[in-house]
Image (cartoon, rainbow, N blue to C red; front, side, top):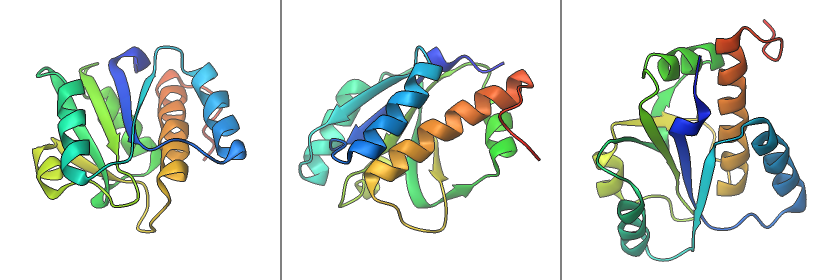
Length: 145
């Protein structure tokens, strides 16, 4: 089973839309232990510096990127399960994206879709997919095929 307390999300920018905030809060209640850290919008270099100050050496860094790996929900659940509860930090860039050097520093890159989403929606989608992965690995009824 996936242990959500081993995961962290670093996100650039604040959630401004109420409906997105409410959706995120709903899933965070279902995922106790998931840590979400917001970083203020800034230049890519300053954002990268802030991110690198937060992550530790024993964490797997996963950046969200439109060119990253695309998984089905079941494939993502399996990948997370196979990480054997290592500490994983997901990073969501702001409006200008993440710096190329931070993306190359990542262990792997994840794409939520070939489409491009605003960072607020990407955060909601990632949190929902973490919840879905958790329920898939528990054999729960949330994921229907």
